[in-house]
Length: 112
Length: 116
Image (cartoon, rainbow over all chains, first blue to last red):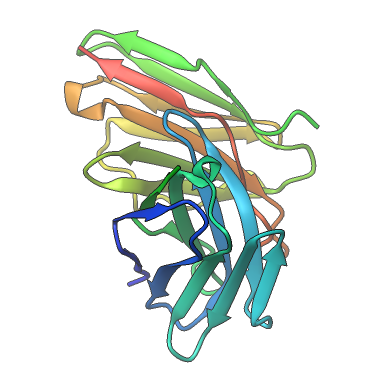
């Protein structure tokens, strides 16, 4: 069964700190891994997409990595800001099933 | 492109009534996903279509739920009859899916459904 897990469920850090969000998946037939941001009461905004043939992707202060052998992805946020406060979700796209399955998300609070 | 468009944004209905949620995917995308989001269960995949054909509906909770995609630019999710436990935010997403691959998925703003 295709399962995605995110730890921790919630995280609170002071402004300026670097942080890492974790995502693990069980499906060995991963095609890609996508990270999203969701603000309260809003939809999902795509942040980064990593294809299975890639090891990492970067966008500004965000860096996402993918390790297929261990079934893990991390989202690194550098120099966090209060505006980064949101829920971050990872989703695995499977080449076997065609499904895009989400983790439960990590709710991040960056304190000024 | 205006992105994935969902309507209505909010829906309040009485238990037992029929509810229809609508989605217009991004032009050119050939995969469409319906998700339900609740605090308890997070984002659950209900059904997804590829080239207008339902590929996997194993996430549809009950026979009260049905989804259609009559053409490449429109999909509906129907709940009949609705129950209070169906209250959730329903999201539609689309992507371009060549065989065996996924590209970036884009989400609509969601429909917040409240069944009283």
